[in-house]
Image (cartoon, rainbow, N blue to C red):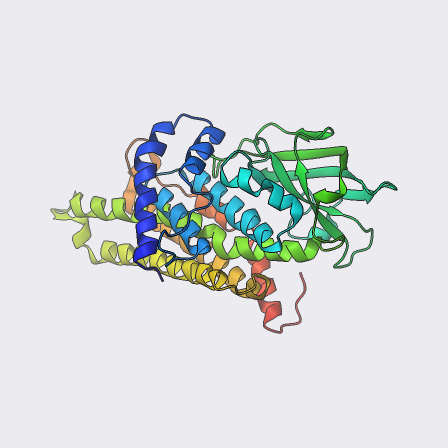
Length: 376
């Protein structure tokens, strides 16, 4: 699952989070993002080459979470690294090549603009459209909602309809500079999960795009989306590994020291069983997500891993939620009182069952891949 090089990356970034990043706790999102980029997290790789770039990125994000970085910050890193950077790097499109260095250095922040207020899991229902002009430019019109980092991002990977028909070739993708005239951002949405990364909407009011802003070919948007979603579903939940390990450690310490009925909590078989279940959830989640990273490092096509990625996302999301319930149960009333050191986070794990595709819809997709005649 992991080796010495991977564990060294986890340790390094855990130490960074516990020291330098902790001192930036009151700073805004972009300041913390830049601090992490300055340390190399957006291009991290094992110094001896024994862990590939995907595995190295995953280990760094796990380390940040283990060291105490907020879950929302880890989520934002995983979203950009696995949902945008790696897929675009694999395509090698010129517009991405022009941005890649700035993204890796933290000067440019990306967001993934797919979801609309009336559709997310059904991309062919989107109404955002891009129309090509006689001069070869594109005119982009529409609204994207619930976009992570939209209020603070510099560029967006935007999916838009370039054909009126509901076909696999109806969508195209564009890398849009969000400073372009006609782009409007909403204020950050108030939210109760992953609160350390802002979310908002993007409005495109007849935005003019040069031809080189097209990613890939016209009509290839759905194919690119299949790639980015496989990356996300397979690896995005890696952001939860650090927080899970941190909560497990503190819960173990609590049950070893807390005394009830003239004995320590940890002497109870019921408590011991709950702790073991929590450890099992961490083990299973790490095994699944690192196995996915290793396959991608070996060059396995993300699209060929779509069913495995969906199963990975479902499994980790549900383990994360059950794990958090167990921790809240063991913490008792302290799980719901601030400043106790045992406060339970149930919103972030619940949100994990929804983003990158709701688990119920992913189950349908997996069943269809197994040959069942089931439709969305």
